[in-house]
Length: 234
Image: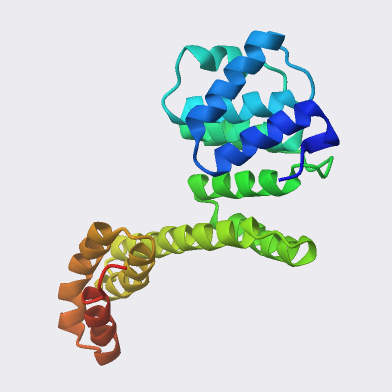
């Protein structure tokens, strides 16, 4: 990973970001504490990226004494704002987080990470049409700049979108008494849940669908039901 800005602070931030991506989150928090010990509550330049990543880690772990201090650090760059937004999302404050990231598409530095954060917020809020647009934008950007993480995030979120849309479809059909249609909608729901490794939830969706599917007797639906019911865990 290239040092941000080509200076020492950028190197520290790049190392912290690499550790974050590798899942070594304790090291990220430790690096942030070192930055705050050395520079106080208003660290310079790129070092604020270390603190914003640590802010997300602390928030995602349920908060703590460090969170108030970290939230007091002023952030004025897309990636740093994105980390703060993801921390708010972890606290159940997705609407507030989406408002926070609005308008931060300039400068371009950190834009890719910001797009991923915005897409995750849209998924949390169940804003599926907007999420589909963001996923398409991430895939297009990936082709232009050789960005591997964008399509990977799009794959994850599109699977979640499939769950949300199929569940909403089943609920709407059930609400108007269309039991067979609701059961058919639960087939792609189960498929999407299985793709996410949520086997118990998939089994529950299939159990809800079974009686109506068998009563209707449509061969294609029953074959798909059987295939989904027998799909082995990955």
